Image 1 (tube, rainbow, N blue to C red):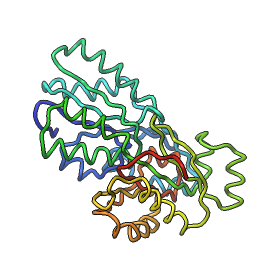
Image 2 (cartoon, rainbow, N blue to C red; image 1 turned 45 degrees about the vertical axis):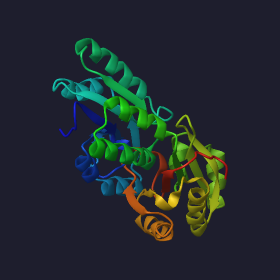
Image 3 (tube, rainbow, N blue to C red; image 1 turned 90 degrees about the vertical axis):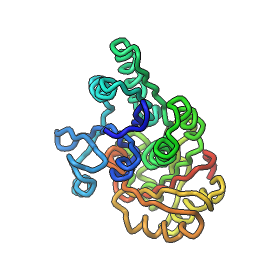
Image 4 (cartoon, one colour; image 1 turned 180 degrees about the vertical axis):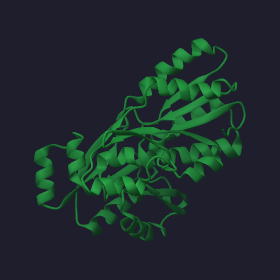
Length: 295
């Protein structure tokens, strides 16, 4: 249990950060849950119950995956370990626009407050997902570790930053979006026939939005970079995140094209929770900037 000061900083594993970063920055990461072949797995950042490689290999051989939100009892158990140590909690959770975890965590926090009235649990709806949530937590965890702010100051910093994380995803495997109800069967059929890849983003409510269509691999790279150049805040001084769902070659190519434009580029694996809904091949680019949903 790593923490700085009188509170712990917590997020969940949809942030898709590396386990090494979380450990070094004192970031506690609650596992999210997915189901494969009638077995429930907790997704930890280190992939201890199922590695990301095995997960995507299963998807490619046709094994279906499902996700479920963190349960009320899981929140009680997870939060209470810190409360017992007389630590307050700042929890930055997966967007309420895609999951009910935010509301469930608030109910658990309310009930725990009755048992631990001297302790505080602050819950922030990140309105972010996957490496967008990861980028938010990258900045928040660095501030937590390096500056050791009060919980109130770090919560304010997080609230002010979260809607300035811009998410752009290009999905290669349409079937998973169709299965999850993100696009219609008719749209999926036409997209596959015309070799069109949907470009998705998150709006200010943290909901997934189908923004446009891309045709051809080179156009994918160009489209993602143009979004950063258009919407990024002084992007030349930024660290940006590239995420991929079993598409390391695509991620490396995107990094090669982006790295001269920015301060630093990190490549991250898209974990099983998000991978369940986007399938293999997805590429993502996140940076700090405006959430401009225009193509």
